[in-house]
Length: 231
Image 1 (spheres, rainbow, N blue to C red):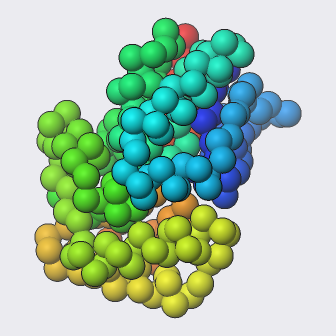
Image 2 (cartoon, rainbow, N blue to C red):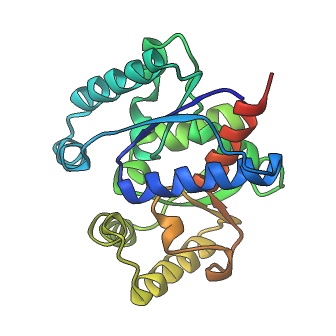
């Protein structure tokens, strides 16, 4: 089995979820006492969050490139970036490595394309919802149309992520507000919902949504196990 290199800490709550899901899926497939060989380096999310809100993506790219290179030197066979938003700098990471980066958009889009639902609503950080890197890759590479909530709803979704979920806080009132945003996206033509921030799965699952959901964290971790077991 290949060794998975995990870039974590964005936030540590979602990184813990990545580690658990990868090892649960490995045990499910292989049985016995099996778990996935892996390395994880966690960055300090306080620095990442500050640079994100300053718009300093160049500094963030340098930080994650260095982290990925350390994982490569440590023996990782491929890289999993345990965050949706920081895939904004995925090309910089890919260009700096001799090993592959398993892109979260690609894994999620491949899951979506197994259905006929080509118009998807996106719940994510404001950066992921408002900047082009996520929706353009979905559209240009996979033919999937991404619909985002209204500006006030985007602010709500973003604030719940950073002020609550990144701290492990799960509130029923926030779940209800997210359900309202999902209804808004359904009214705008969305046929399903991408849970496009790795922390959102702490709050929302299929049972909480009027529309089918694509949980990007779970999808990404299962794709990582696929790749680790390949060859």
